[in-house]
Structure formats: C-alpha cells, structure tokens
Length: 101
Image (cartoon, rainbow, N blue to C red; front, side, top):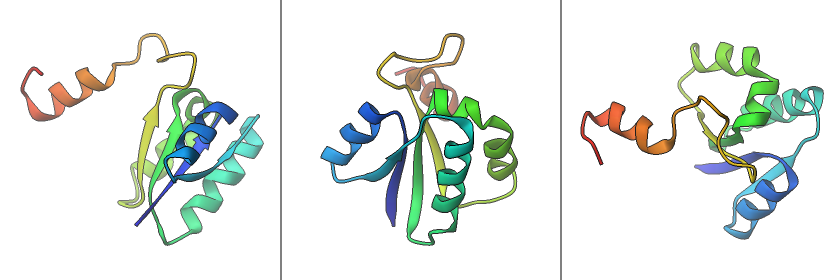
C-alpha cells in the first residue's frame, strides 16, 4: 500500500522528503484531476490532502468518502496551519477513541 500527497508545493515537498510521492496543485480543476488519478491507482491506499485543497473540491471528496472504502483520505493542515473552526488531530482522536489524550 502506497501513500500519495496532494497539496501546495511546500506540503508535497515535505512529504516527498519522507518518501511519499505526490503532486502540488494550484486550483480546483487541477486538484480534481490529480485526486481522480490517485483514486484510479490501485497501489495507493492512503491519500493525504491538505485541508485547503480538500475544501476546493469538497463535493468530490465527500461523494467519494461516503461511497468507497479505499483509499483512506486524510486531511492535514498546510504550512499556514489548520483551517479555522476545524477540529485538530487531537480532538479527532479523542472523539474517535473516547479517551482524552
């Protein structure tokens, strides 16, 4: 199972240094095209996408998330930090496991 990152240049570069391949995107059309190509690659098991890029194509992501099992889609903050109003990773984990970390 492989990882694939979609985001701004800094995020993709950072994941690339850890051995995760990916594509930097600049607009919603490019984001949707790259996301679709990642879905078609059967070797990709986890798609890492920045929150801001995911927001550009939110209907596409939600349509996929609620109908398919794989790949897993993980949204992460970009270099500007988390999107305001969105729960952080700690809050998500706490609610998922029911324990305060």
